Image: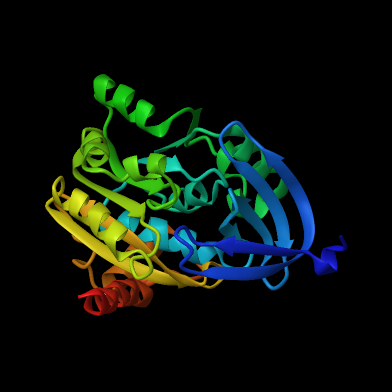
Length: 290
């Protein structure tokens, strides 16, 4: 079949929505021990990482997703020095964490080494050398097994970022967003630490989102949703920030911009205005779900 005729059809779990993308070129297509990995060039979106038939990030808008995932929690924390990343195989989440001059160590845990190696080869625009940064510590293993061991060693992190598959993707994925999972993560969090997770789409999957949100509320004192529209996903991606000390809506637009400038963080999408807007978008979603 000619590539001009080839189409990539992606369907959300449960058959709620389908989107068809034109594929101009297939750069990589293989199945790892854990998942089906594709690197393709999508018309209008550029290079794209696809895992198990679902778009993870595209060249044209990955910065929107990754900046939205990383910077609200990193910016609200006054001095994030040690950061733990669960997932994020492309290296873009790591890239954004390392933009903050306060960071002394960033530990990234991903179970699928093939995703990382493929990303290093085909997606250099994503990681931009972050894997080679001296502050980076990379482990190929189950993220929650690492958290258990880190807890036993007494390790603590100022920010924990969960860049995992969607909570409605599979039974295994659902376990990663449970109360027990959040309790485990809380054991390696500093007393003033912040956890943030991507949480799929609260408007398309409100019941699943509410389960994740309520699980977080059983563990953390301050829990807040925020959201951002990601064009290649064709929906607004939801995030949940949780902490026992800080609220992501506790800083002003001006304070966000001041902290970014002070730390030398240069972004393409995120700033003080969009920080406030993403929280406002989530509030609108809550009203629709009510």
